[in-house]
Image (cartoon, rainbow, N blue to C red; front, side, top):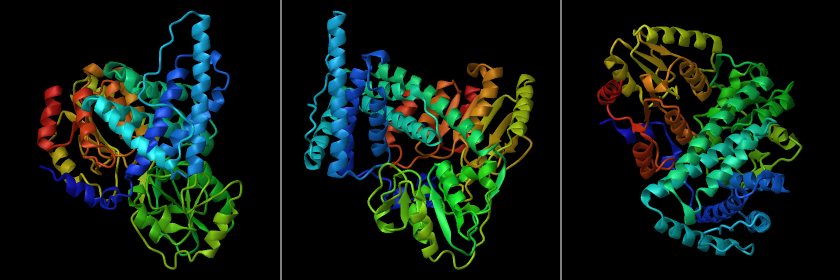
Length: 536
């Protein structure tokens, strides 16, 4: 059996070794209370037509802000927590009043919000923590294991849509359907009327919205930052003052690059999403953008500690490390974690910190990495693949990705996997760097956009039910569940996932993904190939 624990620790994943991605019980209890309020808002909101709701923008802002605090594991002060609860409570009461009025005017029977929770706006943190734990236990006792897993999967999808919506808003656009989808997902979680079938239907709708957001974000980035191209990204460092930009906000990266233009301050990116910024021509052309630093968010403790300059966090992250770097972390985010300097309209404190920091005293050379892709080249390749499928020269098509890290954990697995494949199979690999007669490797690193473009091309030419297409996902992250569900939603025959750290996806949820949605886990190369060929 392939050693999954070896895989996890080979990557130096501090989510496991240090527990920095974990949500502590206290924070989890506060999340539980906020979710109960969000479910209350969603229940009444979904009972009304948009025309009947007078303060939609206020509700949308409160929804996204509350969800943001959960996504980013914000440190709740009494003031922050109270302000969130008061706003959500007021929205619940206003929406309920509108619903009561509607029922009275149209002689409708008013459906009650079935909950074991009494809404109030007088919570203090201590009381909220105690009650959050109490209601979490009640919820767990009222739901079966399968229902609890579906509940958690819906929360994953809520967060995924929330993350993408926040990312979209940061680059100047919005998506109305996303708000109603989040509200529908939340409404399906009400323990009083929880139904496996209804939640599955809501998940189907949510998956489509998540996919639309992915497309919109990509094409908006192209509009703003130029066409994506294949780019060689340096992981080396140069002598001099430096700023690290971590997260996903390309607009803030651009702001930093504009601010340091003409100075001797070098800029480095950090994290998977920010790595992709180098592939956009407008950002890549900045002389002060020197490369990418560190192993990524899972290794933030080491990366941040070894970076000799200020760090701009362009999103609140899952890592509970802020207290270790007081005075060196900055953010424009709505909520600044403890120990992080909150910037408003002025970027000068970040620039001044860079001037005052020691910077890199000596250079360090490391291998570079390619990111991005040439769309015309890829679509030409897909035309060739489609032609060979039609001629029966390709009977099984495999996509392997999406992590071409230099310490790629599944090298041994895929070396054997590619050796065992029949000659009438073809592999499109975004992970393991091997080209061959029936293997095409694209050094694009981490890009779901590319995979979705290829799948769109296939779907235009074939029925997915009749196409022997097999997906092998080699990276676990915050988007994994939504991507797995989308791939199954569009009828991909086989979807395999790598071993995920339990801090990201719990074993029980993986079991439900397997039993309910037909997702599989990597086992042995020979066994997995035989299974795909049987399905082919």
